[in-house]
Length: 184
Image (cartoon, one colour):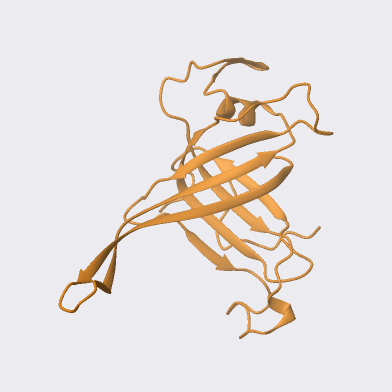
């Protein structure tokens, strides 16, 4: 799998390991306006009044940093984490680098993600591989939540539909770093 070159440096980032899924869920809050000038109410305007988004990652690699994020822990010594003992909210910069054989490749940089794990962590379970689901809330830095770039040969992005070159296969790598690694 070839990883496209991102438009930012990965210096200071750590590869998050084997990530089975990486997704972002935007959640804008809208405010509707209803005209009551006629016999029925009619929606005549809609404003976006707030924006938030979540990142979800499903790992099948249990490493020190992934478990630290999952258990809200703190590293005591090499190989030992204390559970639920983080002195502050666990936040990271997150980068995704697409590595699709088919479809466009994208690079995503999220400068501040606040993490939590509120799903079962099975050390012995029904899955063939251990799964570690971690959710993070994207936080704004200097008024924005991050950026996305097309990194394929057609730097302008996908062509107008319908076009099979736009079909997205969904492969890539996730990287994390302490806050302040990439200047925003």
